[in-house]
Length: 133
Image (cartoon, rainbow, N blue to C red; front, side, top):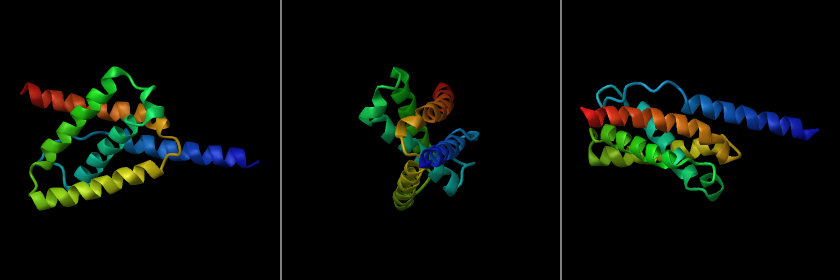
């Protein structure tokens, strides 16, 4: 009898995580993103990078997944570059806390692979556009 409740809670957590990670990605212009948005986006990228390193997740990845997530990380670092060193350290700490909080929203990290794939792909596309300019 507890199984349906646990399954329901797990599916709800996954849905919340997917909604968070797949929310529309605004143009990542350093002048447009505030502290909170930057922290959240960086935290989402950190979360994805961490789950991609897990042995139980690696078998579910395509070769481009890690590459796109790394590219997304480069884009975030370009956005973070506008802050002072002290602010960067504070922002990194808060982004890491956000990544940990995202991890608590799912019981099985491999359920987040599809959402991370989509999120990192969107950011990698933006990074590619910046590189082409």
